[in-house]
Length: 489
Image (spheres, rainbow, N blue to C red):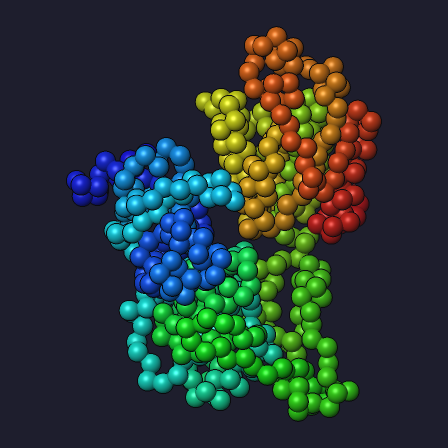
């Protein structure tokens, strides 16, 4: 793919590439100067040094690898236009190194970036700021960089630390999760409960696997935005600004306020509402108590995590051709429609092939693309609170995992493996496909000349050679009922 015609003549014929979401977020932060001193994506030596010791090859502290993966065909080019998901060119990468990740085997490109325009994708973009767009503070700034909702305990701790430091509060919602929109709205709602003129600047910073290094990265980002301190639960080393650790707070049931634990009689400490209990309340549609969180935050929590019986869900059937997955999926669709209360969409593999993926072959890349298309449509149905029922073969675990990730960004995902034996599938063979595959007339046919990777993450496994249709459908309905996605019949 070449870059769009609107680019300067010197760039028009360059190949274009859309990075993965984490890489796009890193790209935006590099271009904005948030990731200083980085000016581009890291090469193999810098990456190895960062992983080993949290420092670049020249000794500069830096906590996490910032790398760019790309398909092998792009590694032949010296300059590449990097674009957003809508095809808008953002930057030109001058390739100084091509290397293979020793852990994943991915091809990676490294080199400096030349900005073409500011990114304009993602939620709450109008609220984002480059560090050089921030007004200089006339005193200390306490950064609260969070992916979590702030409840009454955290708000009290922030007030206490800010007052101790004499600091203005900078709230930095870290985008890249499932509930970005609700998180930002909830922070806007509680800003008035913080001292002074608290500022909110959303930052697209996906979570890293290492918790300690994630905190260090937050500190680098906060420092770039002018913060003098970062609020965190514990001290960490090699940070550019001091960590401010709040003292423990709890709810004093005697006077019904949140306050430092040191000021509460031990028998008056009320246990905090833990994540599991909070999740149970939201899943059941029950109110979150006011003593725990402000009503505006509770409202956004309910938007971010609707009750299960109104939450979007995808039921994804996978199995060999002829396994009975389409038949069970149709039976499930009919049963859910008859019960009412939910909007149901059936995405059958054969129908999708005709309507959504016409022209694709049965090569592995095209089969993967077909499943990704199904996953995208299912994720949109899920995002809007509907029930998507999918029934493709989906033979590859990695592609099924991609679909799970797409859907779980917006709702719930249930995987049903229809594990009917190959011999029974061949015996049924109403389309004559197995016979053609055995004769060599259909190349790369799943179960014959191409593998089917048995799921190890299925929520339910059924075998239609042992179960009549009604019982197979009933098994799926039981799973959905037990999970509280649907009401008992």
